[in-house]
Length: 306
Image (cartoon, rainbow, N blue to C red; front, top):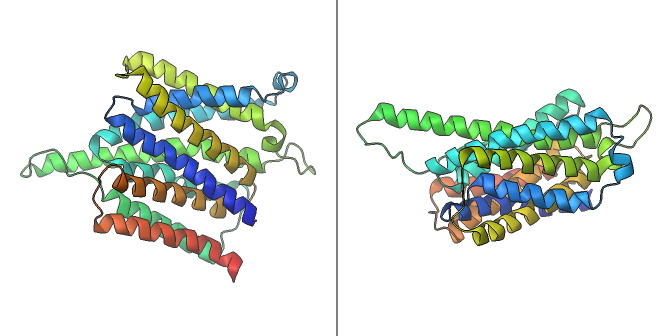
């Protein structure tokens, strides 16, 4: 189990690179859709090389359908990531993207009857508090101070965008958890992810690349520099591939353990770099975000230590 937890932590750091690249791309007109398209292309190439093509053309329908569904969630997530970044800084957005552990835990407890231990349940609560504090790191509304109705409208738009990002970004993780837990047949311990790992990831990344490419064409979104796009997209792609690959090896363990640690590590990486590299202020909300993030990682492991 210790090895799986270490893989999960490294995976979280990898996913943290994506949020950092989203933030870096803001000043260079490299929007999340551009970065996601790069991640999709790189991931499709990386996993495509490993695909057993003889097996690929005989994949079960579930293995084909679910990765494609994940691309729709990714599409919604990336579009509203752009909206969120226009309303505030990296920290609350990255927190919303990594609250996905809550969605996966709820799904796993319902579909796979995974129990949630007492300290794991407490960790879910502190994880939510971490995101609540992070949400207060946002910029002040751009409206006039005397226009309270417009201020409330901006807050509602921002909150709604973060919620859609959360649900959209959860799709891929829910699917990975499902395929990493669901066995290919009754009485067999082999899961779909174990049997078709490269094909599943190939389809997920290929779908991501295609949907993002279509959206880029529709929005006519062009980066200022192809060089910046390649550099930023490459770093994000490395983080995504490493994060997804390592998470896939640990996904069979309880979601309340693995996905909570993964999400909290990603949040801590994002908010720490946002202060060090991008000059965001260390406010009470920032300390609350970091404090509850660390507490969550501690609590989630406490049941196994006592």
